Length: 94
Image 1 (cartoon, rainbow, N blue to C red):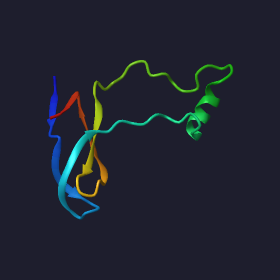
Image 2 (cartoon, rainbow, N blue to C red):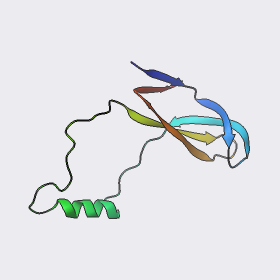
Image 3 (cartoon, rainbow, N blue to C red):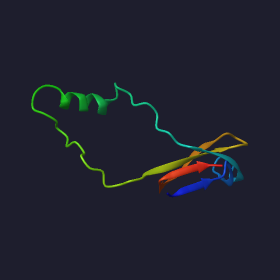
Image 4 (cartoon, rainbow, N blue to C red):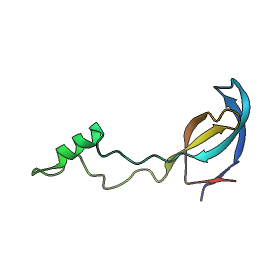
């Protein structure tokens, strides 16, 4: 099993301070989807009534992992930024 250990604190560039600073590392989690967003309303309208599913339901997934995105928060100015997702099975913040 692929387990990647990531330190809780990392020194990296802060675009707001324009210097290298200590950052706390956490895992990015997507927020709750809004039911009244335009895309959600459009999808619900397409699905309702007779005529079946308008979009193909995914039966089999090709990928076994998801991309994990790291959220870096500057300890000085509290500016948050995301680090590009890494494809891995398990991420441990130690």
